[in-house]
Image 1 (cartoon, rainbow, N blue to C red):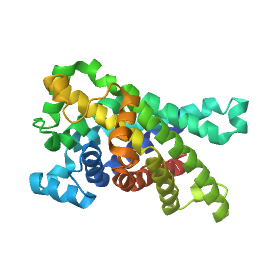
Image 2: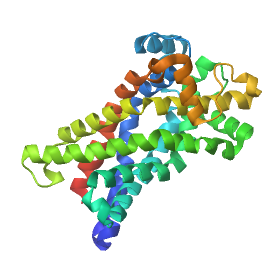
Image 3: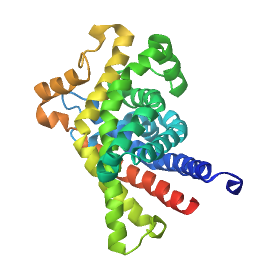
Image 4: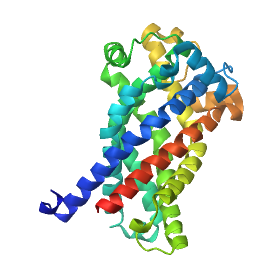
Length: 304
């Protein structure tokens, strides 16, 4: 099938195939940790003392299924969104490396390409993220979605798709820096791994090394950008509360925008508040990024 196509078309199709599979594989084992992270970040006055307490309460109230709240939406959406993410990253790199400034500064090129990948893929990731996170935290906020389909219908009925995409800017401001740092570091770590192993091609890098570079880069990026992720999550949840009962319904917190959320969290909860849930986020992102990028890089190296 691939042999009858031009080289660029072959490369892009293989990138799409590798990225789609990597997105699906990474979501299955890591969704419960993502749920715990969301619950930790949405709390204001410490309903939970640790990840273990979140897990126990979630299982007690909703069984193991409670850990997989929002999973169908996230899983089905991961395929096209991951595909758009990685193809955007690869396409952005090709364009950027035609510019002398980027050729002379590959770290800057990878950082920029990572940010652009998020800008484009958020067209799909934003509605997926909104539905997923509202289902994940609804037991804490006493929302009443009956499931994934009901959540989608309710969000559309009460806010419209325009309301859903109000979170686009906050999501880009949150995940843009994460992707930029993650992919820049991962490219750097891969080159270091190639040098240490004495190989010249990514095809010769073992799968476990791909996982190690992805996890290391993902952990650092997740920790550094946790405050941004927390502000984004709070704003998404706030919109749900206000859609159900006006400004007064947002009784846990009320922010005027992304940067107001960051400042308010810092003012009320301190620096520690900005990083509450960071451990859960790193525990989610480290294996998630490891699986995702290892599958993508390993498959792409062999397909290409």
